[in-house]
Image 1 (cartoon, helix red, strand yellow):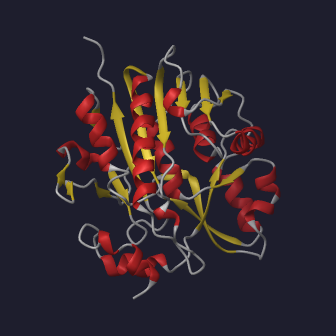
Image 2: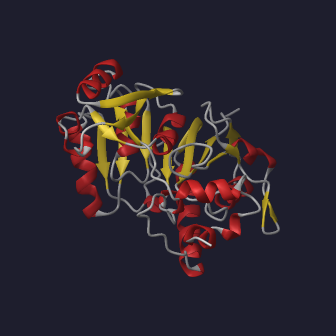
Length: 307
């Protein structure tokens, strides 16, 4: 039995094709980059990468994302394209929640857990750098990478704040809120060099408490008719369906279709004796053997318009 078999054995009954899932975890995820349309365009970037020796394929459901194979023994993070902010090293899974947010130019948008800025800069790209984007990150150390990435990618519409997310001030309302919550990170454990660690029960309970309060505050900050995307890079139902179910039980939140045609599985109907609202079937679980990237959970929510 591999380390992945042991680590994820508790998901064997809910995860489709469990053996294929475990086998895929032992392989490296594909190299993927996101083209920064604030500075360039996919055709230009793809041409430069091909000239540099990479084989380039666009991701079918998002032309801003490119999958790279082959290429020289040069780290993409050391290329001029990266240094000048024309590309961001970002997996398709990581990009999904920011794309599902569908932020529009001119809107007021909040990224409640912003560092290091991969999703924040993608939201700014969706907004065409027009409107107000609040990038909140309570960690001063992590803020440094957030600020560096905002500058590198040419984002000018963002303001950085440092509140604990669950205590973000309630004196403003937003058209869109992204809550990409801190999590156990199980979905990032992939590849022959991965060193996964079992998540202890006490830490899991801490995470769930933090995620629940972050999601509740994010929902409070939505204006009527606004939309929120909640995401994690983990498979744990406690951190995913369980957290969203708590919000649905205590608010008037609605679950919306994700709005993106990706090969994801629906949210769970139940877990360990707990039944979840049927609407959570609209959420999406991304598994590496079905969606060749990292593991992710994404759900799109809305606050009803005032009568």
